[in-house]
Length: 255
Image (cartoon, rainbow, N blue to C red; front, side):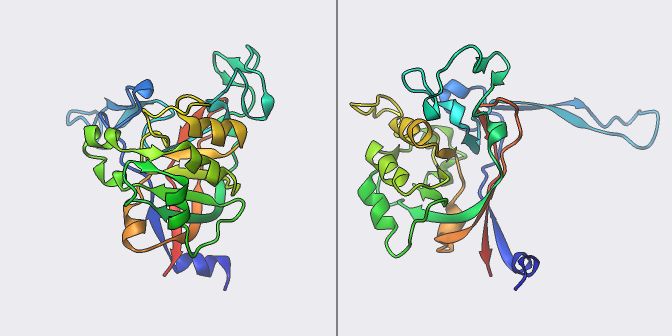
């Protein structure tokens, strides 16, 4: 079967959450998304054709988004030991490891459904969810907590849990190209690690392992259809020197 034939017979699952003012966002990334019309259709326009367009203001890490490797540092160093200096971290972005250096992700995706694990997803929970499926180097591994269904309820969504440090270490050992989840921060927001401090998964995955994190995914339809393995596509915007990018990931499944 040719690639075009395979694509023609595939179902595309949209893994992005809707973007709107007031949508859930990590507090450091407020105000999130603002879209306001600056041109409108006017009935008294000089001709019949009219146009409308909007101004979009958003933080890189609002809504469904992917983290660049420059997004996190530990002890003043980025992934690969790059020291954070004024030449690397400039007022207009990073000169290395920016989101513009991330190639389009087209790879195998795996869904680990941990919705029954509660607010703390551990390595044991991930291992149990992965029973019967092989995790391979270069995969995109997506973890469902079930919080994606709470997107319209900002307070409830922000209270949802995340991954423990040992869960991030377990995933890093499988060498995925990216991991993702349907929560706001991947990690458990208020559970620092004794060794690494706050958001330890960000240090383990991004700084230590060079693995991208995708947050605020919508995984409910994939889970409802029992999909565990799929073609995965994710294309970050080429924001030169950016620390992250909004994305609209898709999962492709043969029908």
